Image (tube, rainbow, N blue to C red; front, side, top):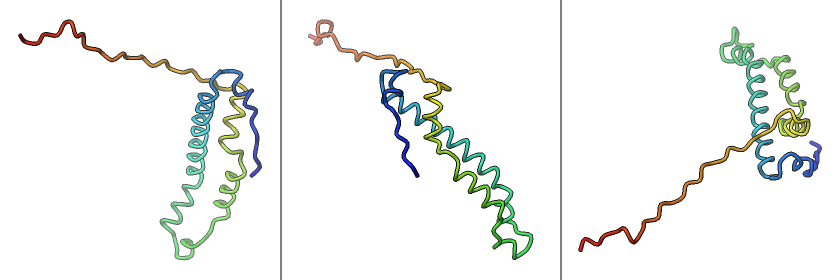
Length: 117
């Protein structure tokens, strides 16, 4: 598998924090991978059913050429991480960070406390 270098300055151009950009791209890559995995499982489902519940003994050991073709089609596709980086560079998606509410710890006031005397 060839290595595709990514220009970090291009990634940094939209947002100043490179780490956040990489995290956003990795989350998008995970989404793409999940979509492709779901699609692959849907296409292979009929063949899994034939293997689990064979009509005859010979069918249980049979390898389906269609099943192999589907698997090979998915194997030669562009990787999800490469797609996510390309989509980000083409500005097909963007991300925004949610600002978390900062809570300050409550510090007891020494003046208000009573000793019980």
